Amino acid sequence: MNEILDDAEIRNLVISMLRAPKARDVQRGIGASDLSNDCDRCLANRLLGRIIPNPRADSLWLGAEMGTALHGHLQGRHDELHDSPMFPQLHGSHAEEHLFFGRINGYGDVHGDSGGTIDLSHPWQLEDYKGSTRKKSCLLQDYLQSIGAMRQGLEPWWKKQKDTKAYEGGYKLNLGSGITAQLSANEYREELEGMKHKVNGYYGQLNTYGLARARAGRPVTRLSIVWINRDGHGMFDDPAHPRYEDPNAIHDVWVLSFDYNEAYALGLLARAQRIWDALSAGATPGDFTQAAHCFPCSLEIADAKRGHDVVATMNLEMAA
Image (cartoon, rainbow, N blue to C red; front, side, top):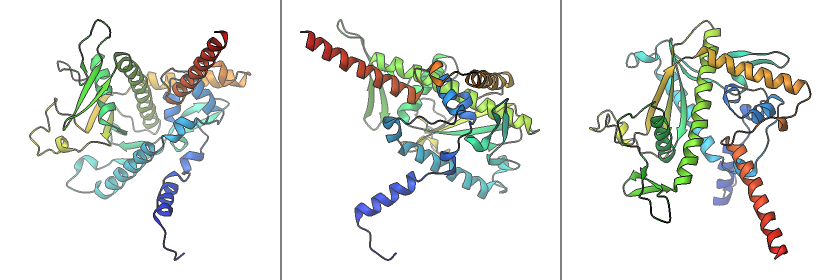
């Protein structure tokens, strides 16, 4: 093809390449992220091989593609550097490792190929990369601070505003260079509840990876999540910068680590087994509870509520 593409055609081509189905998109088996999702209804659907489309959730696609690109880039850097004498920490490590997690009787084996890989695997530790934004990272760190997991003795990132007689004060975040974000008090509380859901999922996901490593004969003792802010500038993540260690600077690459918990991972497999057994006995996904802060379910719940509110308003208007 030797035609000159116009701007609209180039834009469409790039978007089409980004959105073209990947091998993982067409897989139907469950993976670590499914096992660790505390939404029973979503896990039930996934066990049945169903992916429930949600137009609003599906329209927010670019962040996931950027996350996929980040994983691919870091895998490439690992492959280039893992034998380098300048990176002894990478010697003996593996990137994008697909392993066997466990078995659900009547359903089958759960493998990393079905939607879950260990991003970086060291002899006694493993790491998982997560894309984020500065706003979300600061919300997540505020939640982790509230449960004593990090930033103890420091001020929360999001600053509480003064209450008035009419309104409860909201929260503001200084993102640097005069840029601020703000949330109402209710929005901030909802965001923290959403972060609780995320942390529970991430904790379960990494412990499932730890179980996979143990079953491969290479047990781990420590699990680490590495967040990378897509909208950050990385200035304070340069080891030469004087604020590299400053806890009051927003770091665009940050880490949370915890010990491997085998019992937790086994509990996730047991939960999946109970849900599969119920489905096999005639239950449907609708018989299982939705998690309020599961992303697709939260949109579904909001859409249903919005529809109910519209109907209620119309009924009131007709009655008047």
